[in-house]
Amino acid sequence: MAFDRTQVIQGPAIVTFNSYTYYTEGDITVETQRETWEPKTSIYGALTKRSASTPVTKIKFTPVGVAAAATNYINAFTPANIGQLLFGATDKPVTIQTVAGKLITWSAGAITKTPDLILSSLKMLWGEMEISTIGKKSTALTDPAFMATIATSAFADTSFDSSKVPSAAYQAALGTSPASPFDAIVTQDGFTVSNNMTVNPLKIANYGTVNWVIAEVIASVKFIPANCDDQDLWNLFQLQGSNAIAPGGDVASLNQNLVITGGTTPNAVSCTISNVGPDKTASRYGLAVLRAGEVELFSRKSFVSGVLQSQIALTFS
Image 1: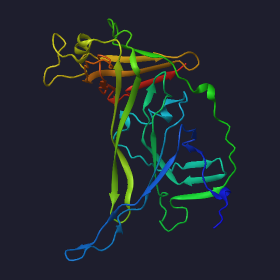
Image 2 (image 1 turned 90 degrees about the vertical axis):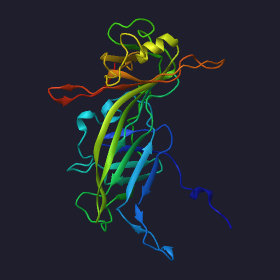
Image 3 (image 1 turned 135 degrees about the horizontal axis):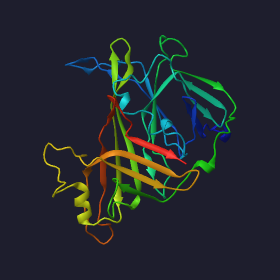
Image 4 (image 1 turned 60 degrees about the vertical axis):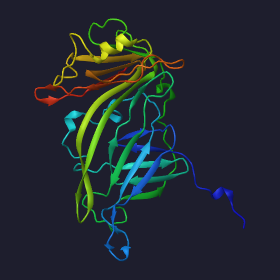
């Protein structure tokens, strides 16, 4: 049987959400899921599967490492957003524009996983992010545009700027007047800054998942120090001595900020993770490993006039 090889459907695309366009490092994956339940009998087992919710679609991709506003990336949400609904009064569509000339528009989207910030001379700036979509507000499932539409549209975007895709050497300083080596922490392969976000679905029997509520937003940073010995790691972890953290004590009791810097103008990076405390340190002994293993610091939440503050301050200059 003959086959026309030009009929194979494939090719890259870009994602636009909240008036911002994301070019991607690799593939864009769109996964649509339907929650189900099974009516069962003791004799015959599961009879079938029945729908428990209207569909939820997750759009996953790793953005190209563009030096751009953090609110489109890691700071899409801050601790001040805890308790808020992801989907508000006005739908925010998500579009996927293919190079081949198709425009897929998902009716209502929200970021459900913010990308990590990766500060390394070996990698681009951003990790994987996720945008979830649900049905159009106040619209019946039977509407042909409830979830999404598809149309023919030529690719015409010209917003990409390769000069804004930096990679540089980075180092960090811990505290206001740090002593060596904490005045210039060098790492094996960079710093990974996360804005760890938890969202909980809100479900109604007749409709399934109708929204999500933001349950947690808390920052952390991971790295493998290249210039720390065992004593340095003990000091960092506040293992013992005058700064030791006793049971019941605040792990971020020293009120220290971690400031990561690197790069050159106009893409010089300054990233401050506020009020960090040590969650984990590790030492290793071997021929092919650095003395220090992975270090993880978390950020304690802070308030100004009763309002939770952002834990990550990121600037490009």
